[in-house]
Length: 115
Length: 235
Length: 175
Image (cartoon, each protein chain N blue to C red):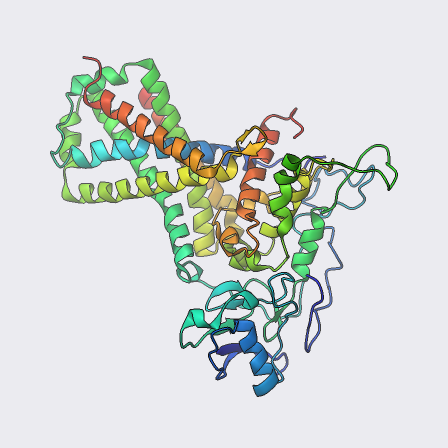
């Protein structure tokens, strides 16, 4: 006995996974690269050092995973919140396509950069 | 007290009517309403029964918040005025009385009874449970159907198709009962059921019985998600 | 609800006719009740009522502090998305060898302002998300539930460790 196949469980799993990943890794990255380094409190690491990090296959795979999961997390929340705030729940399908489409596009960009 | 009045056929929409009610230290909001009805204006309509937080009849919106009026003291609001409105999210029949048919239909839609399969045991048979088995669902069985969680839930108020907190918690009360053999995935796994919830968490905060419907919903999301991803796992 | 006291008026007659069976979409492969269960009412049961229904409250999120906090929590996702864009810009700059240009852009005052807000938002997201996790995950030990604070404590410790590891590799690494 099973309801019509719905994408919601999969979207929710991506959302939850993304929520955990975003919580664990984003604050420290934004703190370092977005605030402390631009303000000069911490020196920018040498370009070679960052390049060396990115040359690790493991780091690249991890970055793609982080990007995709976080973008799906954001897409899911932005979809629901915009519908609740603006009362556009009747346009759920286009809103969802726009949100998740943008997340997929971001994932493609990440893969092309790091692939 | 400022009380929302809606008299069908007379008012196009609810209007507020002010009443002067003495501020007694031991009066709940419900006592204030009873004072109005007995002494000031017998035409005021509202529901109440037990006056002790058991029957779940007297839920109303008190100063914008869903509360049991029997468990909310007037002194909480100082010298007032206290604004009493019907529960949000439900059609108003008259004054503070709301139409709960939608809620009742949702409750019964989750098959809230013990579903048994296989041989019918004689009525005298016992179904023993260990304390741990009882503890697994007991909290969800404390619901008094007072509707506060629906009224506090923006998802339900904005979209009444949402199955809602109490119905899902009640379904979990049976899902987690060791005696139950039923499967409520077809109802709970629907888009308007657990997937409609965005975890505002207000249902849990306003619940006078500490049922924690928000937790029931999130737990079923995990169950439903795992079942969707792993089709062979039954539970 | 037991013993309802309706001083006047009626409890609105059910127009929809009980748990109305409204099929969940055409072709819903729902087993229309073989075996013991007869009707399987859909989640979308909805009754109609003659009662007064107020119009949609456009400012519902401003009505209580809890609603506002909820909406703010959800809106952190916008900054989660921004952080990812920023991160991708950084990665692209490192791979191009134009890190200096990126550093100059990141040092613009408006950029720092955005990122300070993004920092606050991602921290708020992390705290709320990790705190709410025990609602969905029930860990049983010896038949009884692990209390929520233990799961939350574990989550926050993990957050600290992961942050420290990332900071170590970004700033120093194994030379």
